[in-house]
Image: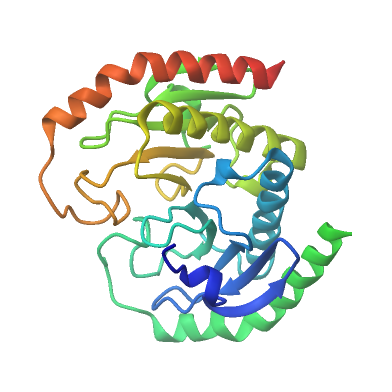
Length: 143
Length: 143
């Protein structure tokens, strides 16, 4: 069996851990509020989960999204489960800003402008509050 | 109020229409099995929907995904809700193949190889069966 990096490592800075999923902050240059909801068990595709687990997974995604919107008022939220490189179910939850290097293109497209270090630093300062809210929201979701 | 192309037009070839969402086939060069689940009401973000509608929306996405997997055995399914250009909730459900122009990069990245017209045509021939299955699956979902 091929080794899977998301089975063996957190895949980023751990923000919250639940029995069935974890939330990590991803260190992706130019995108200061880039989170991932990583399903704990190895599953390649969203539809490998049963309906109850799909609902739980997406309510976790929605919780992260709501916290990003509330604290950071991003231009847009981007959600994606691709997994072409690491086929272990993980949802990208990305706060996008009209000043980021790719907006309005996806984060995977070519850069359209340079980074805005001051604005990125401002977002970074607010992440502890975002993440406290994510943890509280996920605790409430899990009951 | 700004006019919204997904409020005013189907946004692609209509495959299935439900009271709260529709499924369209998107004509995206090089990606023959590229579908979208478009929420009917104008909503910018996934978390603008309530939990019941989020679950319905994602079960529709999962149904499309399952049909693509069953009929086409893609290398990977890619799911995404971005909306940076058209901020009306729509989920991309894309069958990816290891021979497509971008794999394993996202469809929005730069091309890595030329198109394989014969393989694309083979997929295109199978879409009527895929879409009949999508419609049947969604009718079952809606009960």
